[in-house]
Length: 385
Ligand code: DCP
Ligand code: MG
Image (tube, rainbow, N blue to C red; front, side):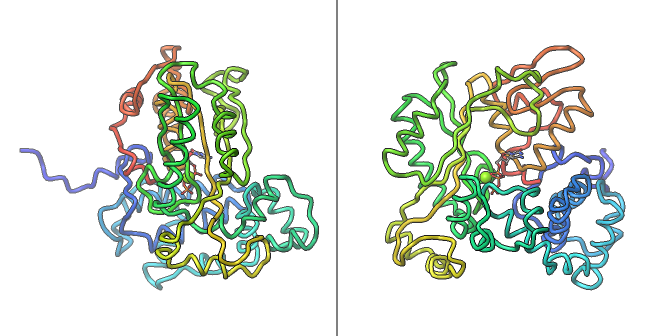
């Protein structure tokens, strides 16, 4: 008979893409503090440190029960000295002094507020912080020069920092479906990102669009955008063309994590029906709670701004794009690291290149992609690394 398995399988699985990470887990009391430190490291552009904290948190999310003592952690991968110190403090005292002082720090709070503006990255936020700016309202008052994106970000700051509910995502799905079907019958539209992983709320709604006839999807985005604009549904949009074929880096090597699909970053004007407003317990609080004057809106307004990302992929790349756009961000990063370090392959949202065989591997489904990568298939709901 098989010996009783005393060691959880997780011990040998140091890549997040080898593990099943559910959305709801037992260790938020540890993972949330670790993710504060990860975020803070991102604010100081210390990527290595940020990833180390995110990997630690991710391992704890995959555990079958709450951690109660340090010795339960001794065989787990990815837990560095610093993370272990933080965990120990929380297990002993209930909180970590480092995490709490980070949370309270002026820099952390200002960086959070400033990077919370759509179109503002860490670099810009940090420059503003060093110039003494602390909030979106400071940007308005000091007359900062803002890009069009950032102007929209400031204008809709409160709405865009109010989590999008699944129900709102479904209403937007219906709209996107109608738009796409109107301009390209037979197109396929899927919800990706956090909502595909089963999240109840998100910071935006992500869609991937394709058509079974290769080439039919070319230049589709401007048509979708025009349709939406004609209906008065867009508050902002910026479309970038597909630059995949123009890329000199080679298909599987985009210059950054960004892919090269035809893509539209947008802000939808989402009507809130009477029924929706009544059900939204906090709808009135986020409308009347606006004390910063960043958003122009008369009381009793019946709409809100929601960030929506649209991506168009050729059918031949749809499986790659689906895998690449479902996330989580850490899961994606770990997939690419696994492919490179363990398999000698290069994975992107467009393609998978096998360096040993010196050829691209085709795939028609996510299942085939996991198989190419020598990984057990992990469904979207368990990619919440
Ligand atoms: N993505 C990625 N790397 C990035 C940005 C995005 O791998 N730098 C992929 C994985 C994400 C998906 O795109 O899951 C969508 O990006 P989002 O920022 O919208 O992230 P989520 O949808 O996962 O979460 P949220 O609820 O914050 O929208
Ligand atoms: Mg998203």
